[in-house]
Length: 128
Image (cartoon, rainbow, N blue to C red; front, side):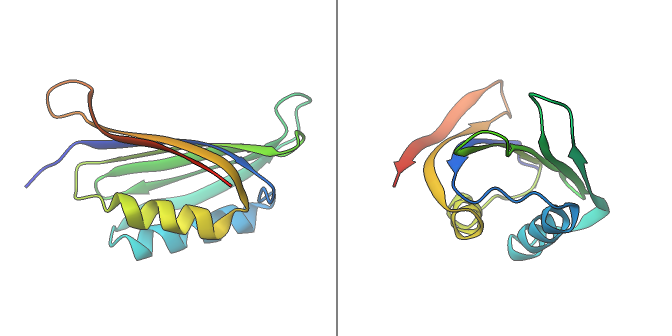
């Protein structure tokens, strides 16, 4: 069965990852733990442009993609995360892995079911 789940996360973190290997490891671990399959990547690159410094990473999965950018020159660090899948998505597992990776100061998320437009399926906030 095909699903159309789109998860967006905006988080302020005390422990922003900032190396390409850390980004690759995070995405590899996430894909494996949520039972998805990599088709290309993960790829990561550190952006050294003033005002936009941080890590950008993406992985193409069999059912679409996962991407993020982390701004590490601000305190706390800022993470913008995007996961789109046409497969099943275990929201709780994704959020748990995300929280285990970063020292979360605050986190907001929204999950859309995009089968028939942008239907909000779940949303929430977590402040530490």
